[in-house]
Amino acid sequence: MSEKQSVTKTRNKLLQKKYSEKTITTYLFYLQKYFEFLKNKKIKDNPKSVQKFLDQKKKEKLSTQSLNLILNILNFFYTNVQTNVDKLVIKHYKTKDKRPQTLNELQIKKLLANTNNTKHYLIFALAYGSGLKISELVSLRVKDLDFENNLIKICNKQGKQLRTSILPTILKDKLQQYIKTKKTNFPLFSNTKSTQLSTRTLQQAFIRALNRSKIKKQASFQSLRHSFATQVLESGVDKQSLQKVLGLKNIRSIDKYKKNIKIEKIRIKSPL
Image (cartoon, rainbow, N blue to C red; front, side, top):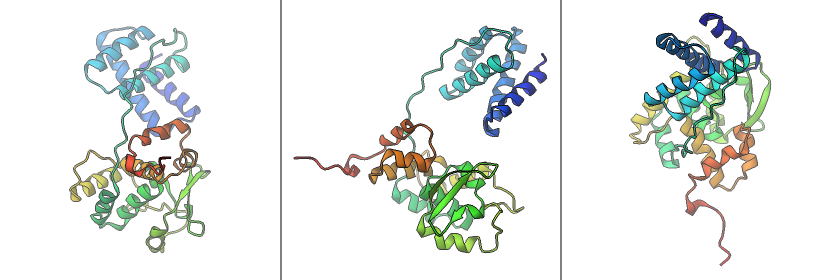
């Protein structure tokens, strides 16, 4: 099987198993890098060559997360595409349990105060106020806002509702004003061509707002969602409720936010 055929077949298999487009793009990028490595080193395509490829990437100081991504796609390749060889028996690299980077309430206020663009203001405010992912924000349609019940419907690409999140009442007037001329099935936040915004555009807008606010922190757009989760836990909401709002499959994913909770904000009284 040629390299081109291998990539095409892998893509088709990933699509069949309903992997997201973003994951497919990342996986195929590393798969092609693997094929380039084999070609340059004149190594045969087999599971033993995977460790050599990983060792090289480790020398290049690739992150543990990236090394595990490579292992995931190559494991998928040898299990689902190149099935005439032995399966991989390489263990995943242990990752450090990093504390999610968050912004405190004052920093959030500064960020929003320094965002004059109404569209970006509403996007940042919803990411923080509703705990939405950046991919969910760009996919929102006007009709996904339920003003009557103060809810936001999170749907997949086919329009099927996956879950609901909270619609901050403080944003209702601004949002209703913003959507006055928009059709219900249109993207809530669109570009100048009235099509869906790119996540890269929003990430860049966030960094600019962070710089204008003079916040010296290595934060990313995802920090808005992390801040939401941390502050909701601080308020005493149970893990199961937060899991549903965030749309997390594993409740253990909530535990990483506990590390950000300050002891003075834990609402448990001493029995003394």
